[in-house]
Length: 318
Image 1 (cartoon, rainbow, N blue to C red):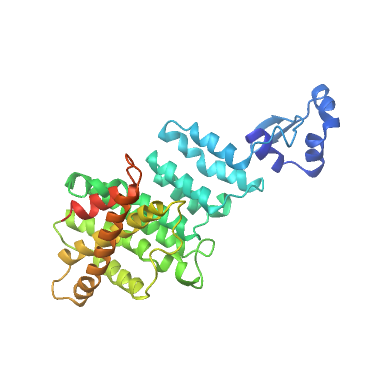
Image 2 (spheres, rainbow, N blue to C red):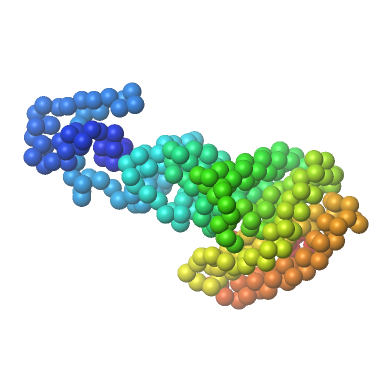
């Protein structure tokens, strides 16, 4: 990928003509041409565009599959930068897959870093499903750890990471500027819900005290986004109906968890708590119905992520 895709993008027009012209093969073999790119020396060779240049998607994920250690993932921003420089574009669905794979390797941080370097990597946070994926996996690790005080640092770290991404969304290179309708990630309950979930989880570990006011702040923001009446099923992807139900539960359950915890943490008679209590029954019923239908529809032996998330955040919390 480096030699046959990234390097040609840094060559001058005459040099590119040289490496891509089959007539130049013997010339390059007999009279090697060396040049320095980014402090590294390369020897030019003939490149067959059809045989030598890997397919963007297959090549990218072949490299990802070779990442066996957490430290291997540190090259991701450079890899994306190389693709962008060479004119190779990725659709949001492939960035989603990258987010999932990085999270499974416990490297959510490297996808956030790639988004921060958007001008170089092209990792844009504009697509709703991509942003949903980023926020879900940020809160994924602390989900099963909320009852253990020793892990408050991990919850706090996840909250800070989610807040960092929320700030990135305001950048015009991502979703910043004027609102882009109901699918704008900045006004989606799935996004604000994760911020509330993590803030409430941290406050619970601190003795149910909203010391910095973040539970109150995110609860009010969530209520505001819910007040817009956006459809949580909007833009859900999946080849099968149960895939969509699972995705919906992944995005819905952190919202419900955050609201339930906020009710326990905030002043009982406050207006915020009153509005949270008014909203909770309908959302809880939606999640209950979706969980039941999901379990009826999935193939035997399947373990959908949405059901796991529901069980961790809703059933175990009851």
